[in-house]
Amino acid sequence: MNARGPIIRTRITLAGRMPTPRPTRLKLFLLERLKPGELQRTLLVAAVIGVLGALATVGFRELLGLLERLLFRSDSRLVQTAARLAWWQRILYPCAGGIAAGLVLREATRLRKCNAAGRLHGSFRAR
Image (tube, rainbow, N blue to C red; front, side, top):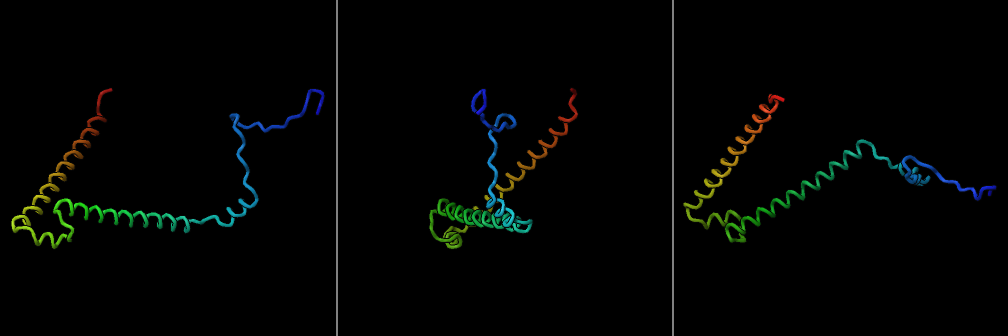
């Protein structure tokens, strides 16, 4: 205490923020000992990517199974379902799928060319 009142010691920080807590000795020790190197980080990223890829594969297969059940109203495999179709349906369905895929690719190519041309012409506009 002094003549003006009690002495209050505070930390003044930048922008009036409270100071961040300092790590304890145990935390520092653990961080220093367990600090992963580049190889460990690479392996961890590869493991995460592998798990996500496996989940995507399982999800894709399940989605295909669902589409088979919805389109062909059958729980059997695709080969058995195709064997039960009439001969003209075995020809028509793949042809229709090929035509649809071709149209989608043609439209995507056209849109890509239009976007590229628009960017090219946009760079020469008078300002």
